[in-house]
Every structure is written in C-alpha cells, then in structure tokens.
Image (cartoon, rainbow, N blue to C red; front, side, top):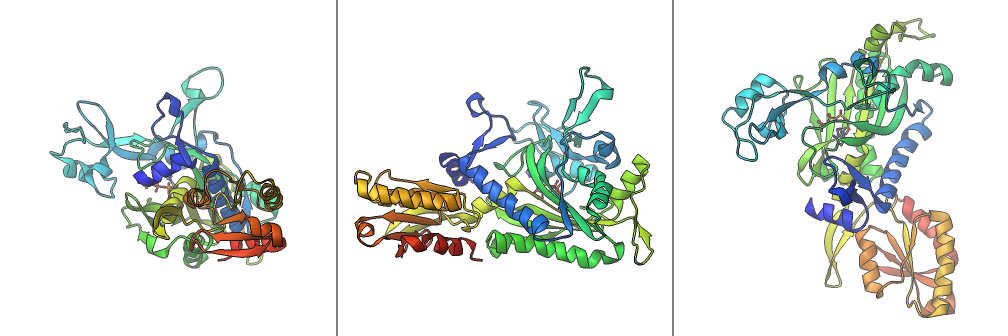
Length: 446
Ligand code: ATP
C-alpha cells in the first residue's frame, strides 16, 4: 500500500485533499493522471450499460433530496455501523473491525470485545450504532425542519425516478437505470487510502424486473460485473473472488447478495456488489409517497411491483484495484523498474512522443508533427524530451503509458519512428503514416 500511495502522489494520481492545511481524514483529490484514469473507468462502465444496450437509461440525480426519501429507504433509522469508543482518547473505531468479524450484532460484538483494548492501549466502551449520514441545512434557518442529508448512495434518486424514466423513455420491464455520482458517508474510521473514504463516487445500476425472472437476471448481473473487471479492465482473475453474503450479513429485504472481492494490499475486500433487493425499494417508496409504483405488463395483463437487481461499485475502489493490479516491479536489460501495466484502453496517457535529442531542430520538427497528429486522435499524449531516452522510458513506465514513440536520425531518412511497447520493452520501426491506425488497433485489443 505504501508503494501505491507514494507512486500516486509522486506521479499525480491521487493527493490528500487540502494537503497544505494538513489534509482531512477520508477525503482525497484526484490529480491530472488520476482524473484521466477515473474518467476512463466511468466512461467504459457508462458505455457498457447505457450506450451498448437499449434497455438501460442514465440519470444524474441531485445530491440533496427530500429527506422523506431517506426515511422511506430505511437510511435514517438504520444506515449505521457499530462503533466503540476509547474511554481515554475518545477516538471512535468500527467495532466489527476491532473484533475482526463481519457482523453488526451488538451483543456478539460486546462479547468479542470484552477485555480488549483500543489501538492506543486504553479500555473500550460498549459498542453502539452510529448513523453515517452526513447532514446539513437548506434555507436560512438551521432548524430541525430544514435538516437534509447528503445522499449516502446514488440509488435513492434512481428509485424516485422510476416512473419518470419509464414514462419518458417508454421503457418496458425489464429495464434499468444507471447513475454515476458522489455519495457521502461519515465513516467512523476512514482507512486504507482511497478504499474507505467519506466522500465517494459510485456507479450504480438498478435493473427492474418481473419477480419471476429474479434468478436468471441475478446471474446475468453477476456475470456482467466479473466480465467488466476481467475483460474490459484487464484485471487478473487471480486477484478476484466471490463472497456470498450469509443470511445474517445481508439486509433483511435482500434475497441474495454476492460481492466481488479484490485482493487489495490490505487483504481481500469488497469491490463490487450485486444484490437482489426484492420489491423492497419500490414498495417502501410507494407506501411513503402514496404514489402507485407498480407495473402493468400490457401483454400478459399482469400487475406487479418490480423486483430490483442492483449492481453497485465505487469508482475510487475500482481505481485502487486497477492501481494494485497494474503495479509491477520487473527488470529490463538488468535494470529494475516500476511499471504500471494498465490495460491500454484505460491507461491515463496513451502515447508519449520524444525527439531523440532535444537540441536537433530537424528531430524536434518531425517529432512535433507526429505529436500533433497523435494528440488530435488520442487526446492524452505526452511530449517528453527531458533527460536521456532510458530515463524517459522509465518515467512513462511508471505512469503506465503503453506506447512510446521516438524520432531519431533514421526517421529523417525514411519517415519511420520507433514504437516501444511498455510491457515487453521491445521496439519496432513503423512508418509515420501507419502510426495512428496501428495504435488504434493496439489500444482496443482485448
Ligand atoms: P463496506 O462493507 O465496504 O462498507 P458497503 O457494503 O456498505 O461497503 P455498498 O453500500 O454496497 O457498500 O456500496 C456499494 C459500493 O460502493 C461498494 O461495493 C464499494 O465499492 C463502494 N463503497 C462503499 N462505501 C465506500 C467508502 N466508504 N469508500 C469508498 N467506496 C465505498
């Protein structure tokens, strides 16, 4: 983890938020390369769901919603984690994490923590629940009636827009609604870099189905998550595993819940959840709002409240998984290097262009022409003429640039350049006119 945190800062992926003031626990800023990587992840997810299919529609809901939404969803009463307090320092910890178990049962946690000390060596209080929703006020008066919540998940406004999307898009069940956006959780102990933060971004898709299709659809969305990680992002299968929630671990309304765990540096932990949420959401919102959220299947004449299969993943967690999976130390011609083996499709910088020598105008002129040509095609293309060529390659390896182009003296004679592959460090000569096409093919390869 230390290596990843340090590379993230050194190379402009992730910074502590408000760093010059000492930072703020649980909040991070993405730097020039981090935002490119995260945008690539989000765009791929969005393309795979909203653009590639005709049964999924996008929305972008407000972060602050009518608080009745969070009452109906159960978050006001129950979006809590068990917490214990150090009796001396008053620092608070997640009781389940201190006990090293996956349960939220206070009696069990109390038993397990009996006699245990806090990480500072002090006695602990009794575990109790702590609500993680962040609050603020709307309007000029800070009174109870003006209290609102920053959304703890994006799903809320997907359910409240069920009718809007169905009617405006003439959608027929089964159909889905996808959303990417910020969510806020007042985590008791934010930790493990961007794994557990207080301001997070989620990619959530709720698929509304006829209850009779629940088993088949559930399996399809489990497959989608696994295939997205392995085929689209190129994450190694050996870093992934399934974790099925036991009946006591999952929410009371959930019929089934499977998480994909990723081998994060701190251990295998949840990356992506697929849950069968039954008709809990639409039924609860129908009851609390008084609106009819049932669905009439015009062909069969059957009326039902759709079940929801939820597919939910954090952007930051996905980015940490991608960084972890890509981080490699190997050696090239006897020299050690750090190389980020991102799939070219998601690499923040696609190509770097270098003139062999920066004080030779003919080399610089041709390299500038190649640079301009590639930049207009691929956007994130870097110009690098600093230091010797070996150093430039090392720098690009560390940010995972899949291809480096060098313009040398031979280029002036026959309009060919060298194309170096990040993973093999092998170089081939390629004609300038064939460059764009060849790179396009290489960037899209499965
Ligand atoms: P955890 O058990 O790790 O707290 P969760 O089960 O509460 O997570 P969900 O409510 O299912 O998580 O949220 C969906 C996804 O959002 C998670 O799979 C994870 O990728 C991401 N996520 C949840 N909480 C956080 C957080 N505090 N920081 C970063 N990502 C998060």
